[in-house]
Image 1 (cartoon, rainbow, N blue to C red):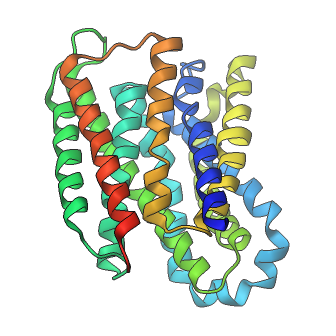
Image 2 (image 1 turned 90 degrees about the vertical axis):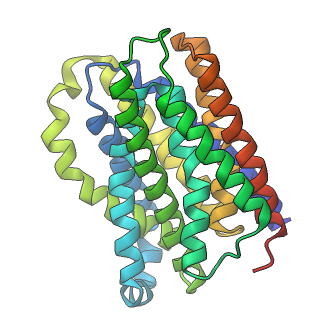
Length: 296
């Protein structure tokens, strides 16, 4: 029952996260660095505020495992900057698919290095298909969009950085929970510290925030709904299932993002890139099977 509820809450978080790319397009005057820092920064600080009593109570454990907290906070700081920049340079669909699609592979590698994961045949096949899919996305031209090829390539590279940092903060938060720290403390401290690290970025890039009411509404939505509420759901799910399993389930996010991008923004994707996306989706299935059969 607990595992099923964990899966359900991660699924809900993924649906909420899938709206962020489309929401960001309604504030085109805002830089992706500002949108990312505001969304994750304010959302993270709110999480920390909500968990402050637990954090104070468990401060000795958090200090004891400060290296995990530091790794998680830095990853939280870097993730939104890379993620939203990736979507701006390569499009909502491709940026989201690469960022989230690469995360399960990178998460499993992190867990393998830390001896929390055992490589399986399904995982190797899935990883190979996922890498091939990302290559197809990166090196195929798409004349149906205005995005230039070299920008798309940079966007995909930033998406891989986003995928790595997403995997890294999920792993570090999960490790804190396994050390006996409560979900609220682990997530609140990790995202709160990451949010504090993002404050300088907000200040340096925030000049255009108050240019229009739409800009303000978009940033409030991003901070409160996908980031604050989404990560509360994700944190609960992460306490019930492994980081690699949670990240695999969250691969629903690019599906939601892609559907919204086509229906609302009117993004179009070439046949070759659709093939790349399909290969990444098949990768998701293989890695999910691997996480189910993994006994370690």
